[in-house]
Image (cartoon, rainbow, N blue to C red; front, top):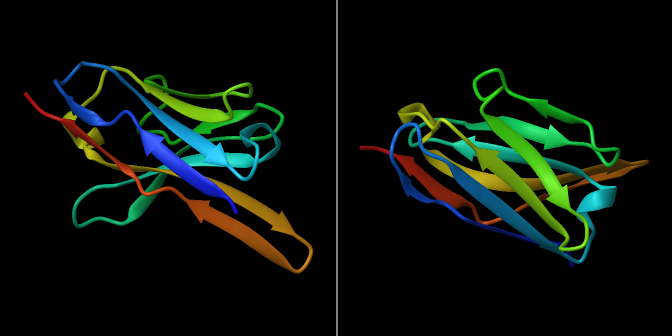
Length: 119
């Protein structure tokens, strides 16, 4: 059974940095399409970044140049390095694994980790 567990959230001042981790079990991050999403209070869950099994990364315009998605295959862990954090980055961040196959799809989510950017 696939399980995703995020960690690394917390309170940080504007301009600060945080690194989120997503440890996977029951699957391997290196062979799957992995994504980070975030959801601010009262708002919809928005896509933040993604990485393909080939290592190609994409980012939402709002985080491009500040966030970096990566993975450590040996640790089976996905990361989101967040720099120059802004108050609008405050949200619960979720790790996602998505896999499409003939006749269906798999869509797994972690429990989320809170990131609060405030002075």
